Length: 318
Image (cartoon, rainbow, N blue to C red; front, side, top):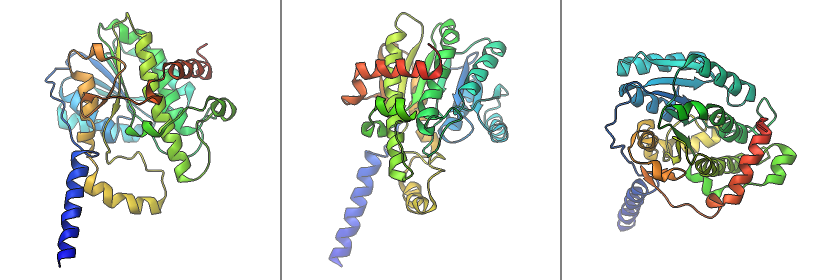
């Protein structure tokens, strides 16, 4: 009996510890209005992106959902409009796994939309495979597609007098590394068919997000644009929809018990989008609505600069 009681106390203590650390919730405290402002959210039809879009629409923003699947996007738009009463929520087709699609999206947006105040690079995946351009799908979607999209929209962001770029990274960046030889040889930062191998590639892509934001901030000095990378928390989303069935059987019970819901996961993104006075922190990495210290790999300016230059070449920007 004592053993069972001790085990129960231990499990309860472990649960409380996890809830207060790895699965800690935070709250965006800004009351800022978004009336008259325009936002692009990649992957805004589900999960964290949809929760972010809903809150920004509730505050009066014109929200462009940049998504692959029109049907899913239009269903999300109906939900958001019903929840917020904001009819200024629209869909524009974007496949981050195709550089041509990214260019087409940017061209269409720049022709049809007069302003852009916030770009939220939200979409991401954990999967194996290749993009339409032959890149590893996690590197291509999580980093390279967003890199090109951001570069193509910077001028429009600068016109508004205070644009922001928010890129969703992850605490997983801590386990990432950038192997440029592998990238140039294989068009990928990871290879292999086993789950742990494409999880490593995911970590590498999330490190790319942090380094991209760091270098972007340097290049934006003297402009009206600031940028931030974000760890949203460990959230119940469709991010891992490509993993195997047995992994889902293991993960789902834990996810239901501990993982944050998408609304909680959107709070740090919303903080970086809405909070006044963040501009001096441009280039920083945020978690739980606060800037966080980064390790050596995530603050290596030489690697960040090289990643930018390599990404430019791979996207055909130079």
